[in-house]
Length: 422
Image (spheres, rainbow, N blue to C red):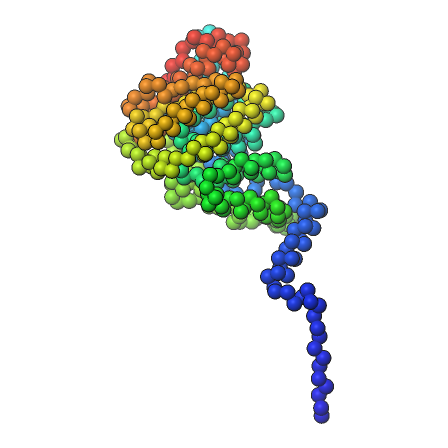
């Protein structure tokens, strides 16, 4: 018996393309269809499956408030650490800095006037973040401080490191930027990227530039976190319908806290109990010159200029929202300043003071010799004694500014009153 020869079927030419090309084409078609139909709705940034880092905790705490704070403190660990140390002493309680955002030492200092002791309620929110840059302060303020959630006064602690840290390739590479960029959409995201991705060297920020391009040009890339959240929420609802809400999906989309304290301090996930401050704790002075040599190693004036642009944007945002701004030039030890490139500090100080003046912001210089080595725990961070002086200086600067005093504590005689903090 002779078998009939089966005729070979010829595939269309477009199906003879390499598999990778076909896959890319299919992805682009799906991407275009999803974008055209706006398939993935926006999700509140604090609900996205991102690291539960300092930025996430503070944002949740800030948005959960029922009353806007009168004052918000911002800056890096140079503000965060001494204020928290004083808070532990002031309350005589152990402070969990991950969950504790209030600054009652500042609140009591402002509310405790000679004419109205403890009668006036003042709220102060500590939004200082470890390792943050000026661009990070802008990201926080422009995302959260607006409409019905804005404070009356923003107190921003700054020094040269906040502008030129060699470990930060570009503004878009920080944990704060990566978290708060989800508050920006469409044209606002495009405009922000133009500044945040600026670098003086082509190789800097390559990863961030590539991810930014994908997020802005590929709908599915930009919406990937929202899609993950919505998918998880969908199946959670299905499970709850069967179990009556007793069973929950394991949220494996969120990064677990790191066991490395330094990683948790500078961007990785952090959880309550990792950073505790004990009242009246003492610790030997630490020489961290090696760290700051590294931070100032590749001083780049272009980075200073980019961060100055963000400072201008921050001031403009606050002005548009009727938020007063007080910039505090933070105290430093002579050992820390000796590590700075020649002329860099003077340039930073002059430009920051000038920007403050031209934008109608207050400028308070506390790096004036009034803080001695006994006020520091290392070359840059103050101890509780320095923190107490810092609080008293901020309280005094507000009380002695009649306009600020009346704005924060209306109908009270703040100017010239006692500013001591217990």
